Image (tube, rainbow, N blue to C red):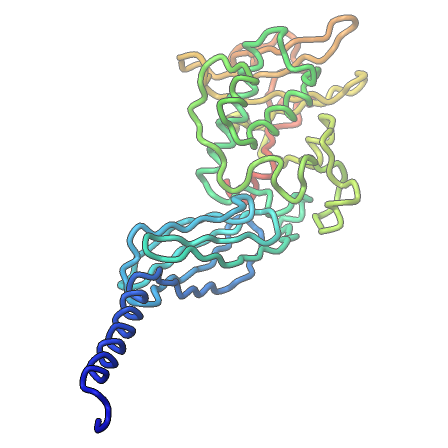
Length: 349
């Protein structure tokens, strides 16, 4: 380096090294990024189909403290997060509400990132009974949870005496109320409003929660035919359904032997010649509120004259020997239609 002072050359080298070091330190200190692979990116909103999100670090760092979350839990849920060597796989299960949801990935030392998962309407009805498959509870744990909540809520109304919600004015109303509330999220505010006689022991259903489904608030099918997408908007479902409609379009026959009944099943009767010929009782099994081995049914009598009626809880031996034989749930009684089960439990048990 003739003609260049030695000190200038040294300064140039030092400056170059400083720039390189600064760049290296900045790169080392800067948040790393994730390499994300979501396959498939679109799945049916059926409540059970899943997809995998593979997460890898861009710089070889370990993914410690990794968090994967969805911004709309009614469209998707994180089922599991599994570490496999230097990468992590998150299993994402579809909800039943179609649409796009953002999946957020974060970990210490990494810039948070998002990726979009799309779910599409599942309009299948594999049984052809008019109940969409997205409404059927696929997980055995969810089915047990629904049964416990439905029976518990129906029995709870008996202990409220005359302080019933205004909507419960006949047997169909009791069924609709317990069905709808069993599908809700059950937080502390909800429990206070329900005035429960004892704390509930069941968790919440995981597949979906009312009213976050494509049906929104219109839970009950009110006409025949298999389900199709147009039913979501053409009046095939409603919030109100009388007892005959619940029997015909929302439940299925189990048998006429009471031994086949499980908690949360329904006993339907038809007494021709009456103003309201159809009647329903809820099979509770053993009480969830009082200790004991006795098995019960619960029902609303419906209005009679000036009386608004009342909710009654009757032990099975008493019902089987009821003075008016028309209300005995036995196969010899032509007025007993049989044991029925909600369609959302159909095809599984």
